[in-house]
Image 1 (spheres, rainbow, N blue to C red):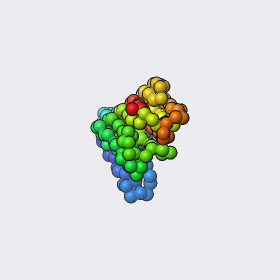
Image 2 (cartoon, one colour; image 1 turned 45 degrees about the vertical axis):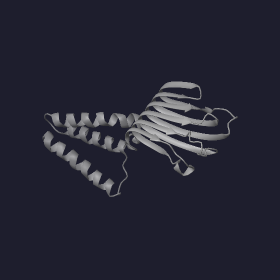
Image 3 (tube, rainbow, N blue to C red; image 1 turned 180 degrees about the vertical axis):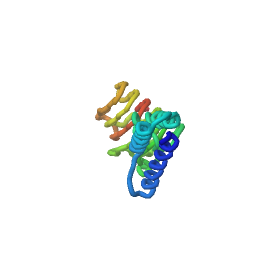
Image 4 (cartoon, rainbow, N blue to C red; image 1 turned 90 degrees about the horizontal axis):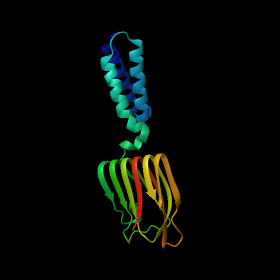
Length: 192
């Protein structure tokens, strides 16, 4: 079997899985897709004699495309790309904020926004997440950065699997819980 036939079989197999996933017969996440494709390409290379230039290039491309997903997770494909500023005006606007790649700013400083006893969730795949909180608000923080830097509540941590947590104080007029996640990049919580 030549590498062209093997490549064709890998693509047919991926197409069948894609069709089954689109028809909701199977539920495959992005990480699973990358693994299935790499296994299929690897088997095609291992089981067919001859040169495998096309398969090697395809395998390399799939692996390179998959690295951000493996490091960051599926959220790299959630939300948008570029810069996004979210400025909620009411409690109904406080749904989870999601962004794929770029900069996401969540501005919670509107004086009319009721933050007391609320939870604000925000996640970013790759880039910078900035959350602006009013000065007179106590913060309960649960923040995670897969790879990068986190700066909040007077703490700064960087590296791999960075976790920041804590409470900012007990003298504010309102209390908000922040649940923040960045796959790769920077996370900052700023009170102003």
